[in-house]
Image (cartoon, rainbow, N blue to C red; front, side):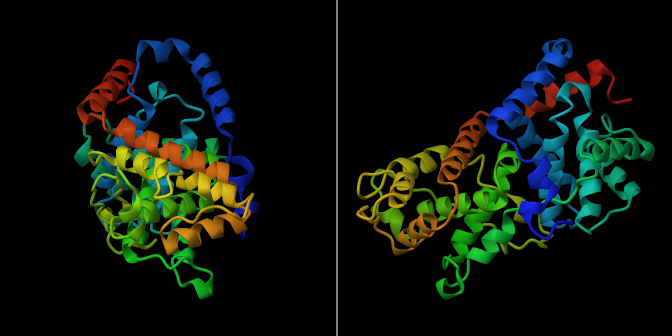
Length: 345
C-alpha cells in the first residue's frame, strides 16, 4: 500500500480526465453496440442510485461505512470494461461488497453474503457460492489487483478542527452535511476524475455555503428555506447504514445548490470570488467569517479551483437527475437485461 495518495495505484492507474472517460466509454459502447442497442437501460446515474440503495440493504448487518464507499468505486472501475448489458448487476454488487469488506478489513463469510443477497434478490442471484468466487476473480483481474482505495473522508476529518491546528473550524452540522455530499459523490464520476481531497473540499465548501444554521444563508438573497439533515456521528468506522446516506432525492436539492452557487450578498457567485481571490487582492468579502476563511484557504493552497467547480457541477447535475429517478423503472430495465441475456443462470 502506498504511503500517500500521490504514489498510490489509484492515482497512477485509476485517475482519468473527463475526456478520457468519454473515450473509454465510447470505445466500449462501439465494441458492444448490438447488445447495448437491444437492451437499453436507464440513465447510468439512476443505475448507481439504485445500486447504492440495494447496497444499503445488503450491508444492513453492521458493515463499516468505508467498505460501502469502496464497493461503489469497484463497481465504477468494473463498468469501464464491461457494459451493464453483459453482467448481472446484482451479482456484481454482491461480489464487490464481499471483496471490499476484505480489503477494508471487515470481512464477511462468503456464505453469509450470499445468504443476504439471496434473501433480497433470489430470482437474480444464483445460490452457488462459486459464482461469487468467479466474479471476484474477474473483479480482481480487471482491477489488476489494485484494490486499495483512498477516500475523501479523512481530509474532511483533518479539516474540521480548529484554525490554530490548520483546520476550518467546521460545526457538527457542517461536517455532517459535507459527509453526506461525499457519500453522494460516489454516484458520479468524481471517484475516477478527482483526487479525494478535492472532493472533500468541494463538499466542505457546499456544506458551509448552504448549511441553514450558518450566517451566510441569511445573507444570500433568493435562497429557498431548506432543512438539511446531517449524517449522524460521521466516522469512517461507523457501522450504521445511516452514515452512508446522502442528500440526493430530497425535493429541491438542485435548486438549493444552484441558488447558493449563483447568489451572494455581493451579487457575485461565491466560487468565482474564490477564483478571483487567487488573482487579485481587492475581492469583495462574502458576509461570513467562515466562508472568508475557506476562500482564503483555497486562494493560498495549490488546489485546482477549476476541478472544485467541475466537481460542484457534477453534484448539481446528480441532484437534478435524481428528481426524475424511479426505482421501479430501473428495476424493470435491469430485469429485462438479466432475463433476456440469461445472466441469472
